[in-house]
Length: 173
Image (cartoon, one colour):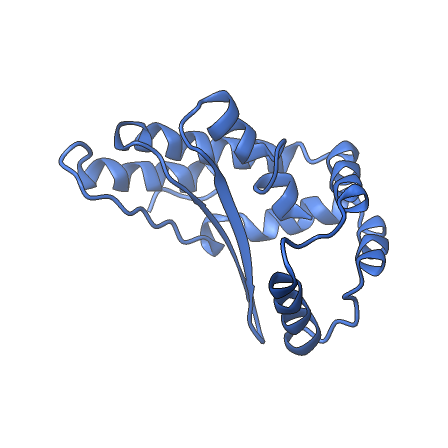
């Protein structure tokens, strides 16, 4: 649910800010990789190099604001998205991957769309806020920036990474 509220799809908080409002990127991508004892929540986007430093700070501010302002409307929109979309996945391969990860790795028995929606309906806004505050902290976050140019100095990006961590509730490292 958090992935769809924050990252994926039209209206997702980061998508709206970085793509629609600022026009810095063509898309913001999110994915979750499940492992036996943990999962990785990954967010990617690409920007022109001159926009990179500003986009990093905008990313952190948008994420922090989204964490603080999670609402019943956000929760309902995600449920509505899955209820009215013909499927949660783009193709059968993606659906099979979901089943494999959730049934075999996580031990879940929910792999029918109706069951997933029923589980979504039982999630409260407070639970979403708590989870967002656990996931999106400087201590749980790795920030990686790939670039190859003369335009932005490495020291500038390091400062922006430290500032991102501070915005998200951490210390300058």
